[in-house]
Amino acid sequence: MPKNQYLKCRVTAEEKTQFTQKATAIGATESDLVRALLFSDEKLIVLGGGCEIAARLYALNTRFEAARQAGSLSAEDTAGLRKELGRIAAQLCEIAQFTADLSSKYEEDEDERSENDQ
Image (tube, rainbow, N blue to C red; front, side, top):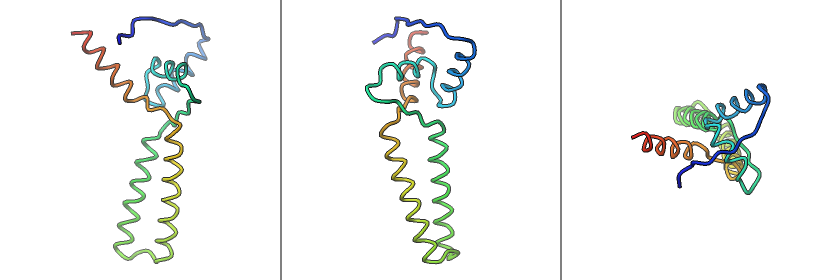
């Protein structure tokens, strides 16, 4: 469905700057963030840097596995780290249930804009 209607509201220059920074921080357009905030049935929690968190956890796990295979860690260290990584992963999964993935919506909007430009 084409997006051809507008909503308008007035904000201060500072509010506009803050909103733009928030949208940029999560990799969303301002329009995507407004729609998510307005139309979400549940409380919207945006996890800025979520991809970075996942990448760092993956890198940590990779280094951990390399150290384990090289025999640099004791069995006790290995068990403790595995348990901690599992706990962190479980918490991230819980958080993910309440976050909005705005990146796919942004990509759809970009595709739609490209089609309209042609």
